[in-house]
Length: 168
Image (cartoon, rainbow, N blue to C red; front, side):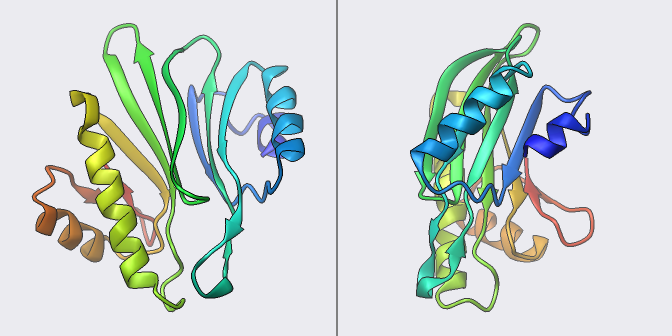
C-alpha cells in the first residue's frame, strides 16, 4: 500500500480501492493511517481476518484524497471483505465507494459467501439513493456476478477486464 503511493502509482487518482492489505491489528492500521495522511490521503480499512474454512481474508481499504469531502466515514459491511465510504464530489454530489475482496472460488463455502457479499453490496449501494461504484477482487466470473445481481433485481452491471470484476 505504502509502496504504491511512494512510487507515485496512484498520482492521478482521487480514490484507490485496495484489497489484501494484510493489516491485522489496530497498531498496523494506525501506522498506515499516519503514513498516508502525510501523503495527502484519508485511509479507511477493514482488518484482515480468517475466512470460511480457515482461509485467509486479507483485508480491504479505501484511500481518498484529502481534498475530497468524506460524507460518511468507512463502514465495514463484511468483516475483512467489504468496506464502504461516501464522498461528496463538487460537481456530482454524493458517491458511495465500496472496496471488495471476494472469497476465492473453490474455497469452502465460497459460492454462498460471494452471494452474501453481492447481496450486501447491492443493498448498501441503494442506501441513501446515491450512485455507487464497487470495485476490487470479487473472485468470481462476471457472468456469475451479473446472475446474482439479476436475481436480486439490482440495477447494476458487472463489467470486467479479463478476470477482474467491477460492479457499477
